[in-house]
Length: 114
Length: 113
Image 1 (tube, rainbow over the protein chains, first blue to last red):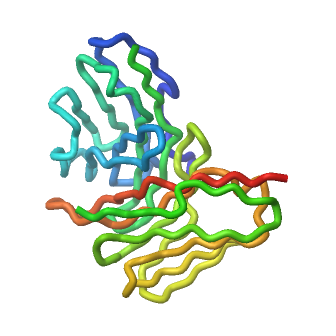
Image 2 (image 1 turned 30 degrees about the horizontal axis):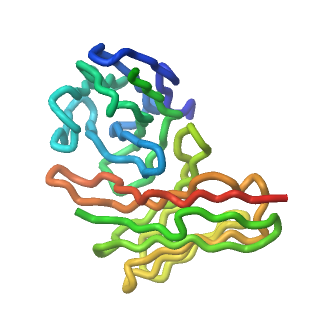
């Protein structure tokens, strides 16, 4: 396993700008998850994909957040019109099958909105 | 929704001492996971427990699941500086579309020489 890869590791942006993060899961993994983690808190589930299908959107924090996994491989998470409250660590994870199994996490993208 | 409460929130122990971290769920536990996180980094999987009474060990770390009490504990024997980090428990949470992991707030562990 080459592991879950996330880019960039750090992103600093000004309020109101759009940002996009990329996640490359472990190659044979069908499930891909996005989480958000703020200081002193555990990861908070945002959304997940089974191959290219996005199965859960209701936990995305607002309509400014969107995610895609167009070919069932890598995924992107976009935040439009960033706000200071969006500052957090965004974590991606993947798993082989259909849930109820361990997740493999990337190193995360740390977003700072000024 | 399922809530996971971890205790203590933070812990400072002297190297060589034993310690226990607890995770209590507001709902029945179907699967319980322990992860470790270094500050500013991703989560590293430690152990998964699925059956009541199940106990697993890896090196000096032992985790147990008490399904009746909706609780899990993580015990570290003879702690070392390398054990420092944030320990997170996670549980399978049922959504309309399937399962996702729901996490507690974590326990921050510092091991002093």
